[in-house]
Image (tube, rainbow, N blue to C red; front, side, top):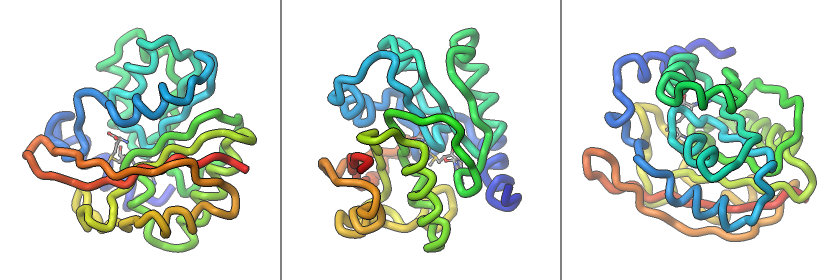
Length: 205
Ligand SMILES: C[S@@+](CC[C@H](N)C(=O)[O-])C[C@H]1O[C@@H](n2cnc3c(N)ncnc32)[C@H](O)[C@@H]1O
């Protein structure tokens, strides 16, 4: 595991409360709208990559989804999410890994990533991410990616990010995925700042 990045995130989650981070949202509406629009079986295998302590797992469990995984580089945030969820956390498969190094074992129907891919800026890391997502998804599986758009912030959590245009996102994934749809969304942070995200749905070829 690359210690510097892990340390960064462990530190963030030891000094910031859940509602103090810019990506906080009390209900993951955009992600839920997308996932529910897919008309999945409740047994669909869904992974939230860099899920942190977002409420996506809670809300999906409430809707009856039973095969959920959350991957995050930070052990602190996984502990925090488990503590918040109590016994319900036992219904989630928690994976404490760096996505840049993770080797998936199973295959998923949906890979969800809100505000994680954009931290990868080296071409080889982005390429590895695409290969990992392609290996982790079943044929026809769905990739849901939300990154900062070209009009979004240049930094998140003190780290520089790679902003995405529709073309850049499509080019990044086109060898192994077909684009289904995309849209921009303005996230309002707890400090009332607006951040433009680009969300794209893609399907594994
Ligand atoms: C901006 S937060 C977004 C959290 C969550 N997706 C949400 O929407 O609330 C980014 C998350 O990605 C995790 N992360 C960052 N780099 C990662 C990496 N290389 N591998 C796995 N997780 C990572 C961080 O620990 C953090 O929880």
